[in-house]
Image 1 (cartoon, helix red, strand yellow):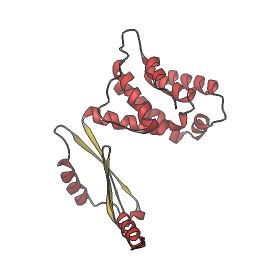
Image 2: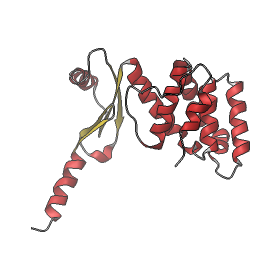
Image 3: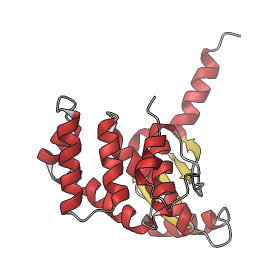
Image 4: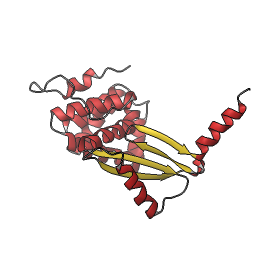
Length: 207
C-alpha cells in the first residue's frame, strides 16, 4: 500500500504545518486518500480553487487527447520518463505546485491510472468545502422538467442550512423504473430492478 506521507511532505514548506487539514467530507479507498491528502496540502498552500480548476483541465485533456491519455495510462512506460513528462506538462500549463506534485506522486507510485477517481473525489470534497451538496439521480427514462423541480424541492429538505443542491441526472434503462439516488456520500437504491432482485432472492431461498 502506498504511503501518503510523501504527498503531504512534497507539498509542504518550512512555514506549513505537517498536520493534516481535515476534509469537510469523507471519501474512501485509494482515490479518496489521495484526494484527502491533496485537499490538506492545497489548503495549507492556499491553492484550493486553482488546484480544482487545474485538475478538471487535466481530466478534460485526457478525455479529448487520445495520444496523451494513452501515454499517461501506459503501464509499460518508465516511471522516471512519465514523471518528468507530467512535470513538464504541468509547468507548461502553469499548474500549481500541489497539482504537479500530485501527478508526479501518482506516477511514482504506479497509481496514475487512478487519476480520474482522485479528481472526482477531490471534486466531491471541494463541493462540500463550498457548501454544495452533490446529488446524482439515475432513472430509467429522462426526467421531465416538472419532475426535476419537484425532486429539487424534496432534496432541499435533506440539505443542511447553507448547502446548495447540485443535481445531476443520468439515464440507465436497466434499472427498469424507480430511481437510484446518491446524496453526498450516501446511496439509496429505489429502482425496480433492485426490488425484483430482492424478491427473486427471497423466492429462491429454501423454505
